[in-house]
Structures are given as C-alpha cells and as structure tokens.
Length: 321
Image (cartoon, rainbow, N blue to C red; front, top):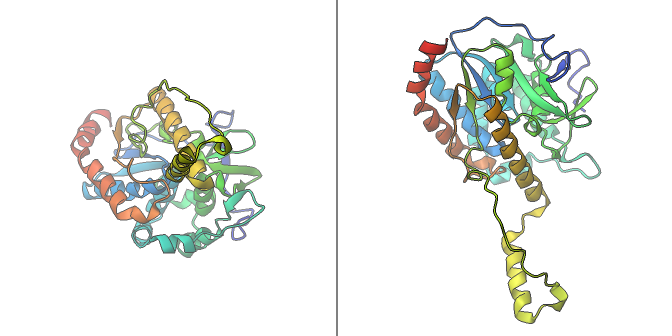
C-alpha cells in the first residue's frame, strides 16, 4: 500500500498482550523528564501542539512519547524536529484545503486512500526511522483481524503514524509486516500503559475526549409510538421532515460519532485501571472530530490547559523522579 516503504523499512510490531510484549522493549532507567501519553481525538488532536509548546516554554524535558491516532502524528513529528512544519500546516488548513487532501475511492476498504496525506508526510519525514529519534517513541495501532493492540516502536515513522490514525471505514488499513492495522484508539485511546511498560516514573496523559459526553450518563427514555411516514398526517409529515434535516449526520458523520463514543468509553475504563500521574484535559467538546480547520482554537486550548498545570507537574517531578 505504501509504495515508498521497502520491506526493510517496515515497522517491527509487538502484541501488547502476547509473549513478545516485553521481549522487544529495552528496560529504561528512570529519567529526569516526563513520559507523554498523547491520546486520540481526530481534529481535537491539534491541541497536542499547544501542550508541547507549553512544556517547551516551561523547560520540562520529555523522556518518551507514546501516541495514539493523531497523538502519534503530533508526537512523532515533534521528536523528528518537524513540529513547526506541522503547526504551520495545521493553522493553514481551511475547509477547501481539507477537501483537496481527500482522495475518495470506491470499492476499497475505506472512503479515503490516504495517499495524498502520505505525500505531505513524505515531504518532511521520508526515510526517518523510529529507532533514530532522540527519545523513545511508540505508536499504538489495532490489528483489524484479531483485535490485538500493536505497539510500533521500530521502522518507518511515517508507516507507524499512518497505521495509528487509520480510522476504520474512513482510511484504508495499513499493512505493516503482514498485519493489517487501523486506528489505535479502538484499543488504547490514551496510551498510559505503554509509558508504564517502559518503566517511566512520571507519566502525563493528554486526554482530548474528557468533556465530550459529560459523565456518560445512562438515561431512561420512552420510545414513543412508531409512525410510518406514509401513514402520517400531512402536518406530522412536515414535522418529520424537519426533524430528519436537524438530525442527519451522513454516513461519515455517523461513523465518526460512533467511534467517538467508543473511544470515550474505552478511555474511561483504561484510565481508571491504569491512571497517569497527571492528566491534561483541554476542554474541546465543542470542536468536532472532523473540524481540522479549527487548529488555532485547539492549539490554544491545549497550551492554556498545560500552562495551568505546570506548577503541579514541577512539584511531581521533585517527588516522583
């Protein structure tokens, strides 16, 4: 699928729950920096740029990054020294430019092929390998055939990032060494567990979906009566048409919102079982998952949310590291 990636440069993969989970991980000694777990969230992921800018401004060293979906994209670009280029690209996006990056295809495994986005990545990152980055980096993906959680920690940086953000039904899956991979948010939306496996003493999670659905309430609701459209009175038909227009999401909208709900529920469960030492939670519920043109707003929210927690983070560094 990715013509530019040779067999030699394909990422090595690890099954997070299999015998090889820790066999390929080099136990790292505690470092003075922090480990970042950058969560998924589609367009909300531009907030990660603001988070990294705030940490840089405060002089806080980052010892490793684990990223899921767009968290892998931003984290990988940061460690490769390309955050400025990514920020310029994000802030320059408009609805029209976004449409120009979409390569629609029929009969494939996704609505988009993703090769136009790959071409943009290759302009800046072609030939960059994960093991050559200055700090450890892991991109989390999901194997579509088995449901395994896959940690990509070696090989082509572009291939790893591309696999981690391959939203099912939207982007085509990515073949990495014989494994068909899709978005890692299906299994680990905020990869705190990856940082823990690398024995990082201070883990900071950036959760982009904390305020999406309140507290995921369970609501008792009356189903009402089923009214067939052909049997409804003229007035009722008018009301039904208005309601349909108000609630219509489209195929892509339905897939993205369903994925949003899944990601939110999995995040809550996994973070409850393996909480980070500190969470940064930008208030991004008003930013749609496909509104990539709102980068200025998302970056600002990420920056402000991180600045508000710098003091607490510095205190944790003196006690945990």
